[in-house]
Amino acid sequence: MGRMRNEEGDVVCDTYTWKIPNLSKLKSDEHSSDVFIVGDIKWRILIRPTWIYDANPELEDQLSMYLSVEDTSTLPPGWTRCANFCLTLVNQHDSTMSITKSTNGNLKEFTENKSKFGFKSFMPLRELYNSGAGFLVNGICIVQAKINVPVKIGSQETNVSATMESSKKELKGQESPRNSELQNTSGFQQACTEATDDSPSDPSLAKVLREVSTTPTGDLMDFRGLGRIERAFVPWLEEVCSSNPSLIDCMLKRTPMFVECAFTALGRVLHFLKTTKVKDMTRDACDRLQLFWEELEAFRFDLAWLEPHVHTAFGMNKFLQRAGRLKRLREDVDVLEDELKRRRAAVAVTKVDLAVAKKNLGKAEQEFNGIDMDLELGYGTG
Figure 1 (cartoon, one colour):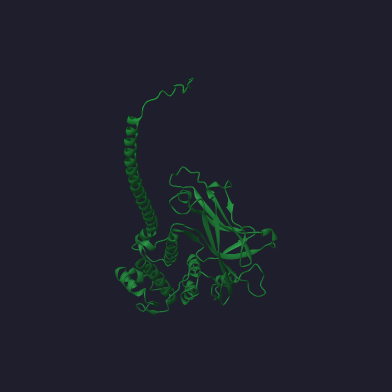
Figure 2 (cartoon, helix red, strand yellow):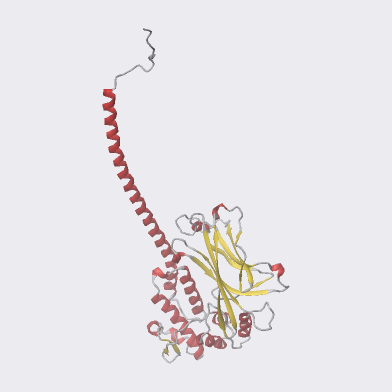
C-alpha cells in the first residue's frame, strides 16, 4: 500500500488483484471478490454480464464491472466515502492489451444511496470469451482494482475527505490545490481555475478546468506574446497557428491566463499526436487522449481541421487489437505447421515399418505348413 502527501493531507493508494477460476462455469450472473481494505474502507469488486435486448445488431452483450463499498450496515447514517479508481481486466497473453477503465482521477462520492460506481459496458462478452484473446486462459480471469483514497483531516467528520473539502472550496472560487494520486497540482491547473472568471457563463468550462490538470516539464517559453507555454509544445503551436490564424484571433479578447491555458491544452493534444506511435495506442492511451480532447474542446477553438486526426487516433486502438489478434493467429498457424511436419515425418516412418511388417508376414505365411486347427490331437493306444 502506498501513500502520498500534499498540502491537504494524505492519499492512500493500493491495488487489489482478483483471480477468478472457472469463470465460464460459475452459475450466478453476478460474481463478487472477497472483501479487501484500502484507506480503512472495505471494498469489493463486482462483475456481471449485461444482456442487450435490442434489435440493433451493432449492440453487443457486455461485461459490467463495479467497485462497491461493503458492510454499509455498520456505517453511520449519512456516511460518505470518497475515492478515485481504475479497474483492469488483465490480458494474460500480452499485458499491453489489458483493458483499463478509470474515473480519470475524478473523485467518486460513495454514499448509503449509491454505494457502488463502475462501468456498465466494460467490454463485449464476445471478447472476454474469445479463447485466443487472452482474457480467459484455462478458465481463469484476472481483474485488478487500483484505488486512491484521501485520508481525513484533523477533527473533521470521519466521512468527509480532504479532497472533497478541497473541491468544495474551489467551487466557491477559493484557491486550493486538489489532492489525488493521478492528478498533480501544477501552476497550469491553478491558473486555469482562476481563468474561469474569464467566462463565468460557461460552467462546463469551469468544471473541466478544475478537474483536468497537466504535469508540465517546467521548461517554459513565450509564445507570440500570448503567454508562457511548455517549450516542447511551441513548434507545433507555431505550425498550426500559421495555418489556422483563427486560433489566435479567437483569443485576442481573453485574459492572459485563459489564453495560456487554452494554448497549453492545444499544445498537449498536438504533442500527444506527434509523439505517440500506433503501437502505443492502448486503452489507457485512448482514455488519456479523450481527456485531453474534452479539455481542449471546452476552450471553443475552431477544431474542424484537427478533429479528423483525433478520431483517426482513437481508431488506432481497434487496429492495434486486430494487429495483436493477427499476430497470435500467425503464431497459431506456425505452431500447427510445425506439428503437421512432425506428424508427416512420423507417418513416413510408420509407412516404412508397415512395409517391413508386411514383408515379414508374407515370408512367414509361405513357410507355414497348414494344420487343421479343428483336428483332434488324440493319443496312441499301442
